[in-house]
Amino acid sequence: MHSGYVAVIGRANAGKSTLINVLVGEKVTIVSPKPQTTRNAILGVLTKEEYQIVFVDTPGLYRAKTALSAAMNKTALSAARDVDLVLFVHDGHAGLKDEDVELIKRYSSGDIPVLIAYTKIDIMPRENIPGDIKKLYEAGVECDVFPVSARKGINVKRLEEAIAAALPEGERVISDDIVSDKSEKFMIAEIMREKILLKYDKEIPHGVAVVVNTFKKQENGVYDINLDVVCEKPNHKAIIIGKQGSALKQVSSFARGDMEKFLGAKVFLTVYVKVKEGWRDRPDLMRDYGYDTKKEL
Ligand SMILES: Nc1nc2c(ncn2[C@@H]2O[C@H](COP(=O)(O)OP(=O)(O)OP(=O)(O)O)[C@@H](O)[C@H]2O)c(=O)[nH]1
Ligand SMILES: [Mg+2]
Image (cartoon, rainbow, N blue to C red; front, side):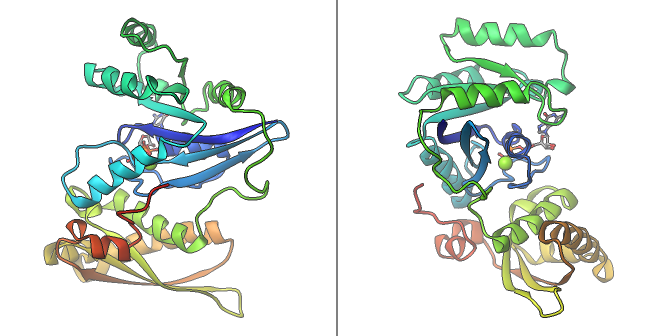
């Protein structure tokens, strides 16, 4: 059989996490319309009779404005080393600029084989696709390009088969009942962050970290979950909470619904909002919140 690790790399908001969830067939990583949704390297495992693909989701490449963004870029770059294949995800609907061509060239000129997923074709004129692919080939990019839509499942199976075929011959690297390397506790924090990304605008969601203080299954089967939403400024805290707590109540209830689906059990959720000024530029706090500034994959 074929098996191996595939780093999924690309610009922020390109659609990397959505594509991984579709390929794995389960939600292993959160998704939102805002850039910089994914902050950690997250494994999503697809095991079939004939192959096993271990996807490594990564934070999108983005101009770093904070120590957190810089650490996220580093996480993505280090994930692209020591893998069997790089899957470069490009948002076709956003157009193909010269900087994109340069970025793809940079990734595809190394020793690790690269495939390109040209995604979101469901929301763009199909006639733009051949021109973009031609532009890549004319610029000297030699890897295969797969136009796909993760949302509509278009061409995803073909991409999966091409990835599997490009992996080395070898046994499974991960036990076949495992779909992710992350704990339930990690996913609970991520689900909360996903709902915050969907609900609030501008800098607020980017300045939020979620810390799970209690994660306990009680004897009656209900999960008791207590978490802190850490934000950067007192005025952010006021917005997150909203008038008489209405915004926080709404976002918490939305998150609780997804947590219950994920855990397959009832959840009793308590949320507190805390302020830690400038935490995104403080490596000590970043580490406390699970963003290891030094960790290499
Ligand atoms: N129409 C359409 N939208 C898509 C598709 N794939 C992803 N999206 C949307 O694009 C947005 C970004 O998707 P993500 O999967 O979070 O993107 P990402 O590359 O993981 O982003 P970061 O983690 O921020 O780097 C979300 O709103 C998705 O619903 C697709 O195939 N078609
Ligand atoms: Mg992502």
